[in-house]
Length: 257
Image 1 (tube, rainbow, N blue to C red):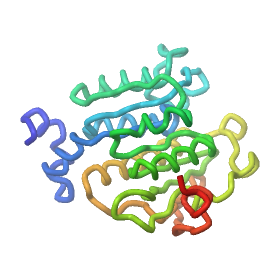
Image 2 (image 1 turned 90 degrees about the vertical axis):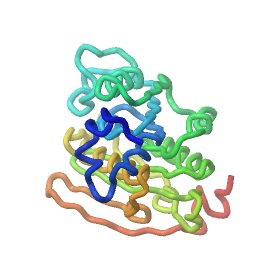
Image 3 (image 1 turned 60 degrees about the vertical axis):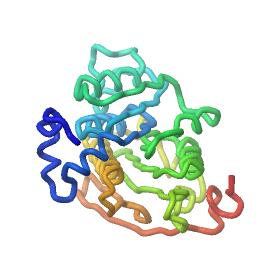
Image 4 (image 1 turned 180 degrees about the horizontal axis):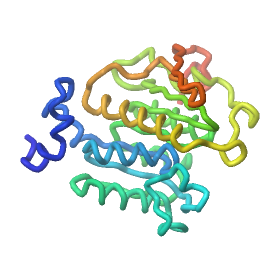
């Protein structure tokens, strides 16, 4: 049962008929792993903390640089040189002291990913390297938890949710079903090389947070099996559908753990 303080803090979302007090209780009991506390991680961390996700584990080994600040708004100028995960956890605690935050001030690795996922209800992939994303996809499938994916560069972004390995989703696709080959630098450029508009990252990060809240509360209607494409220049959303592929390099016959 929600306390009086919780009823007041979360009143504007708890009165939603889709959520209600029961849904808010589920949010407070949920645990989310956020991999990356940069451009995508900033809106994800801020919105999940404000929504009352009960435990946020934030993993990032990078230090805050001046060039980050056009889009990574949870990091102030005074925190330059500090670790992103630690600063992000401190920000989330200031925003909502009622939740628990765990900072992991190091990069995710093949050796650490299983431990990071242990006990989590979902993972939000806020990284920016395809090799990292593939590792997250395999580990999330093995752990049986949803993998929320977002990406942004220049003025475009994309979003999806992968339910591969999650109980009750036997035929769900994973990231490898959608992206069977690792794209080269011409198809997946780095924002340091081609640029990024801060609000575009926030649009995608906000949508990732919305997917996380829906999953935590059991609201349904996720982006599983659909890739949302956002064009910030044209202010347009497009969508493509995809399905599980038997020859997927990650979850197909050749990708079995």
